[in-house]
Length: 382
Image (cartoon, rainbow, N blue to C red; front, top):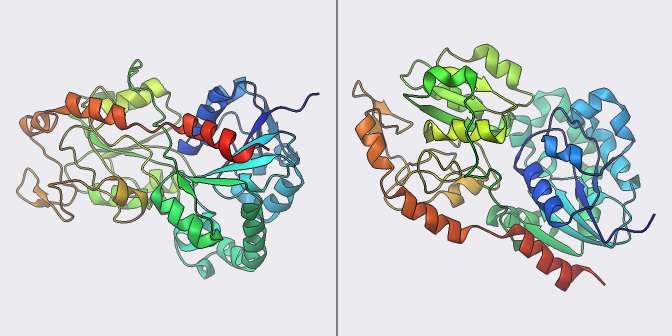
């Protein structure tokens, strides 16, 4: 078999998120490039991966690890290190593992974040390490994993960061100055809309929306608690280890949905009144700017996004006339911490000027693939 000019690497293909959408975008740019990953769970991630040449490690044969690769943390580093990728250039989409695959080709790392379990462990675990068996095990592995991670990062020919926040974290973790290349938005704004049956009764009045993996550092529980006993309805789109816990304790004005198609996701965005961003993020990858109800990769003019005051959300969503701590009143005159207008007239006014801002945002949309192509030509290949 001839050696491919380009191969793609990713940590694991077991979920639906922004990093997986980036892999699909890279794969479209390099047709025929194999995608190497530790494990691939087709039912858990985007169906488009079934059309690609996905190459997995021996962990693929272990069902529990394939369904939840976080359980494989003690063995992922040696398994990844022993997995050989034959290619002139490896484009590694990494949040902690893909930059460590073995290759003699050039390596271009597109970093979504340095390993959270090492450098942001309390956020990753949802508390101090000593509070859980997983945290205690992680503390024991920490020195070895940091050495492995640093060595893997040092082998890369070029590092790209998806945001300024991640650039700073790469510099702090590895001493590497990475170029910032934001990813594209993942959902095509102009495609069809398909209703979500579980939300049909909520569409006309609208709802608050969180689109997130259900992990501790995403703080989805905080959004749920914020609407408990309030007039607001909240829709949570996503899946993850905390799903059962959140579903069991959610009040009646909260609905959790998962495994949506892009057409359904567009519909969900189209009927939302407000997008909430409670998580500690590296990059704001979900829609949050510009157009109105039928353009899901834009937000209405004036549609403010209450968010966690740190990380990529904080840098990505600063805007004029919307100071931190701004509050509206609910229909009973009480202070509303979510800042959501209740009367339809206010909501319509918030959408004024949306088309102009949408066109402006289109002109600013980042070009991930052209940036990777430029780095491939200028920095990586011998």
